[in-house]
Amino acid sequence: MRAALPRFPVTTVGSWPRSEVLLRAMKRRAPELPRLQDEAVLAALRAQEAAGADIVTDGEQRRDNFTSFLSERVEGFERMSMADLLDHVEDKAAFESILQALDVPAYAIRNNVAVGRLRATKPLVLDDYLFLRQHTDKPIKVTLPGPYILVRSSWVQALSSRAFTDRDQLCDDVVTLLRNELQALAEAGADVVQFDEPVLTELVFAGKSSTHTFMCAALAASADPTGELALAVDLMNRVVDGIEGPLRAVHVCRGNWSRDEAVLLKGSYDDLMPHLARMRLDQYVLEYATPRAGDQALLAKLPKTAHIGFGVVNPRTSELEDPAAIAARVRALAETLGHERIHLNPDCGFGTFAERPMNSSECAADKVRMLAEAARLLRG
Ligand SMILES: [Zn+2]
Image (cartoon, rainbow, N blue to C red; front, side, top):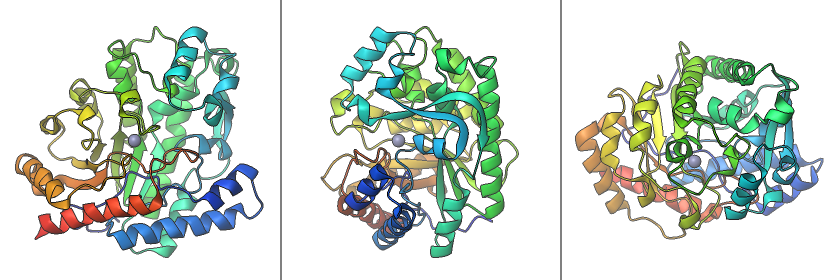
């Protein structure tokens, strides 16, 4: 059963910067890694609690990134580097130009490719949730990659078509995988389950922007954005329909791999809103700290019953936002949306990719503290 939340609950989007010790152990696959991961989770938890978070996460300390960790828990996914993938993508020239445009070394990024029918060999995240539950009384948010990004990023025609009759069959496997996990998390009492779908914005901007996220790189360039968005909505609803208990959330950002705003996607959520509104969800976690995201008035287009995870601090800067200014923005939004619907969070995670944290853990804690201070002002 979901715990009661204070008004304007403070939370994060999921990831927390990993320590050097943890990163080195992950890279070496050190035998002491499980112990170090437990310690890292507890450190991330205590940091969030001390900073005043009302809903905590495990900081994704057991993951190398928000999605590729699944290859350790799911049969059928093979982890490949971008360099490995280059041999197999349909449009090599486009893929190479994407890699060049990204402010990320290609060798540093791993992506799961669907090379066999998917089957969970252990829980995707349930064990991580249960560990955290033993160590805190706070409501817990669990994050999972969304069904669309899993399908989109793991389908590589030349490799996946050997194992699947078509992409629809991969869709079926992904829905089963995530739906089973959501059901297990609901039964275990998880408070929030957030599905990350960072590439939905790119779909909307397809053709309007020259910057593509690497996650979409493997897809044929001719894919029709409208059809893809309809698929994203359908997949999400197939995952969540009828499973009650946790607040079922989607998080959509514009990439979180660089502090250079110029290389990240730009554009308002306007064209995406009708599609998001068709997802039968309880919460939308969206970026509004970055001016790249456009006007917050658009949030009125989402279902009136849904909670909004309002991004009001930038996870990629060192400057701390002013709590009074945050509170003023949230108050203005609350006038139109209602006071009971708004959660305060950063725009995205503080450490989406292990090798490239967007901030230090000290700054992440300070940013959460600013959110908590803003919440105190709003509640008062
Ligand atoms: Zn994000």
